[in-house]
Image (cartoon, rainbow, N blue to C red; front, side, top):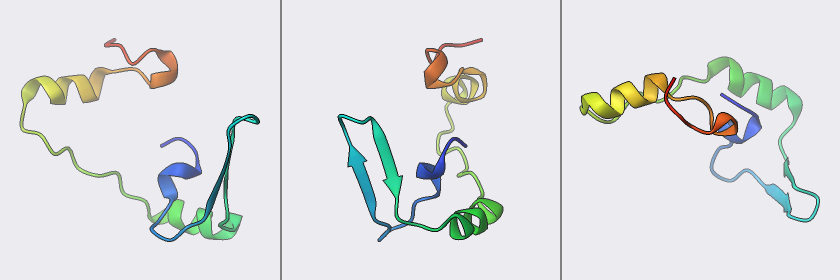
Length: 68
């Protein structure tokens, strides 16, 4: 999991500053910490062996999202 965007819930207020290249979340640090502590990554939704291999082997988008 990356930043707080993965911890957003329905109804959370966000501010997007395109020129400043920033995303701000109107949720306290304490609440984000609680959400992070109880976060469970979603289960894979595909039975495809190819997608499973890709999801387990791909690098992050910041690294080009390529297979290792």
